[in-house]
Length: 344
Image (cartoon, rainbow, N blue to C red; front, top):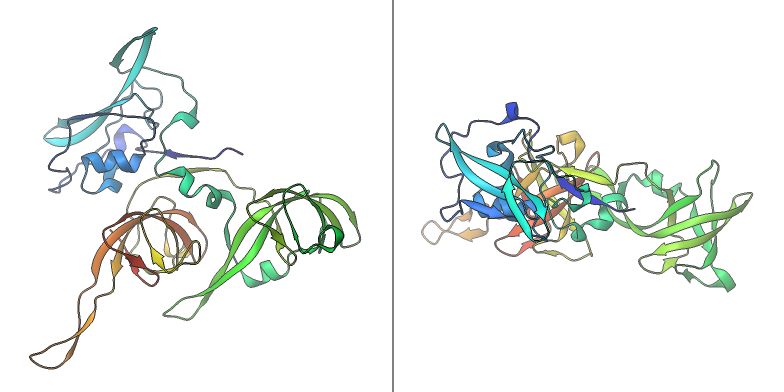
């Protein structure tokens, strides 16, 4: 299924807030910008603003455009001032005749998938509907791959294999998941969940007792015996991102990085120890901090903890009860597991 990320910039003209702080605009900001294919909301926001996630705060909805919440290549974003406050407005390109265009407020019917995304979709595509954080019981109690054809221990797309477990119900397609790291909160020592890595998809062909004959219809790597099968989630594949600061105070850490490495860079997917119960929402932006170094004061000979240093930004794109996935959008210096995350 095709996935997309739609950047929602404001909900109504009444929701536009008066911006009273200095420094929202970049010193070298343009007066207008024409949206190009390949742009993202974050790129465009960063062109105008020092704090890109605050885009909705100065967005001015044009009521003459049918859906001003979607931005398309060719649209022109202009910086204007209303009552002395900066506002960004949208002009939509109108096609008159082959080769002729003009700019102006109008209605243009376009498929939603042509709208620019909030962040690079290809970086998180597989995470939007596949990778999960699970409780131990949910994973250990799930059906599992039992045997491949001719006693093979790995199978791939197109192969027929066998699985064992509770296949009751009318579910025909299952996601194949591999048990990943177990995560524990570094401060409270609370068990937070297990990273279930998506490996592929199988379809049940037939069932006898608790043994199912399955066919692998998708695989991102070799499916191994013992990999677990989970029903495909019934959730929207369209993720709506509101680039915003969290509504609650967040103090967390980066627990892991997709790919099993410890170093974190721009556009890496990271796993956080905060989720729904702490108030995190899809689209929330968090600042990343490096823990201050412990140094020796050469005057007093004391050991002194230096202040934490801000080193990057990330955007949350999927949340679970106790954890969440985020994409690193900015990295001013090398980041790593155990770096802290806070409100921007």
